[in-house]
Image 1 (cartoon, helix red, strand yellow):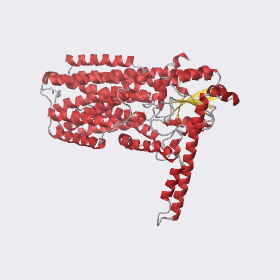
Image 2 (cartoon, helix red, strand yellow; image 1 turned 90 degrees about the vertical axis):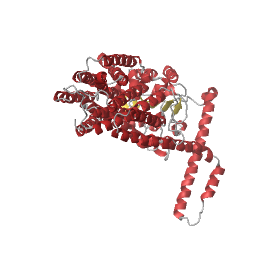
Image 3 (cartoon, helix red, strand yellow; image 1 turned 90 degrees about the horizontal axis):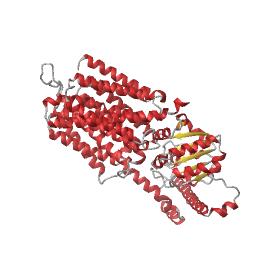
Image 4 (tube, chains in turn yellow, cyan; image 1 turned 30 degrees about the vertical axis):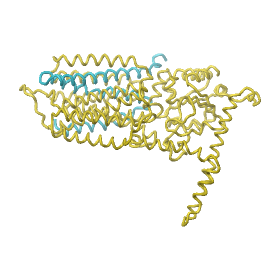
Length: 529
Length: 98
């Protein structure tokens, strides 16, 4: 690399950083994106120029085909497909880095010096090591992203899949991959080592991505995004290209930051998400079976009888234990009762006509919204699934037409990628000034007249504050439970991805359930107001 | 170039990038991620020079691998920037009219 190249690389890297910092404001974001793209273009042209490969026709063929495919996909894609598309592109970048790793390791395309001889790398071990590492990280990114994209596109089952001895196999694959990297560092240019490494790391990527799913997707995608940057950066180290190292590092940092934000929003550690598939299932099963087993008093007494008076027990402890038990039993009984009441209510609703006549002027979701002057709408992944964002916009318009103030509360992990809800609502022409982050709006739930929940569950489940031991315990949630009137437009009342029952659905007062396809429900609701 | 310089560049960019990106509001996290995604296709630079240099010296396999790498990276770059642009325009749609 000459001095000119180094200076250019630094300038271009700064331009990329500038472009990203312009992405922090909506007004400048479009220009920022273009600045980054321009810096990349200049970088590519400069690379072709400086490495003296302008006359090689193969690279132009590949670039033109790639550009056509990429542009077409970007134009044709619908906003609803965004998560899987982001994941897919991400994977392709990782795959390209892996291939660059293979080429570098094999010693293909070594730079030619001024004397016409190929330049022998000064630090062959470093080159081999980084090339092998680029293969590994690149392949993990490629296969992991493809699995994630297939899950998001519902080509394969989106739920976490855990094979027998999953962790053991994963660890073995990782170990073997490391062995390959070490071997590759020592013996350069061995095609078999390169191929073995490609296969092993691809298998590892598959095992790692197949066991995450559902609500953990935003975290996985952010992490893969980070990895694709790191893969590029390592490939850059292998071929001593500062621009590549710099930009890859920036991308890696961004993915890391997003991953961190997502993890914090779910109150979980990254490790528990990557390794958590199996553990989570167990807790889900436990919470699901608990209510039925304690619903009848006989079981409760038995339970009681079993624990009383073990010899040498500390009396206070025992008392405490007993107390806890009674409270638990009471809670369980209450839970069972509320469920029964809810069932009865549902039955009543079925034969509503005569009952409604008796009860004078019962409130309906439409009447609540008609009188509301201040409304918060809470969208979730269900809105994306039903593609209900335009119906949401219509509802919001109608409410505003009637003089109500409408705001949107967005939980950081609502949806399947960071900022998913914001993009969908922007697509429906909802001004971004009306979208509020959780911290900015959580205190207002107490005071608003009505809250409309659309296809969201875990992100507003009050059980997150109380139900210790469940997967969502401790996760910051939207304080929808504080609101006086809540209208829930969900598909059904099943627990969300986390598998924890939402006590809000069985609340006595001020909760209206409009079940079914969110789009249809919303349109009906809008017409009735 | 000395390996330590390369590693240092990586570390500096990661840290600087981290702080700049932490200013991006969650509103724009999807466009940010997709923009970053496009940037991760920067590995195109490496694919181009390696493939070009391998043309004269190395065999057909080098070209196959190289062209595949270029293809994947360009799809990543064009698709990524294209989508990001579309998304960002959506956020701005209201502005010119009002």
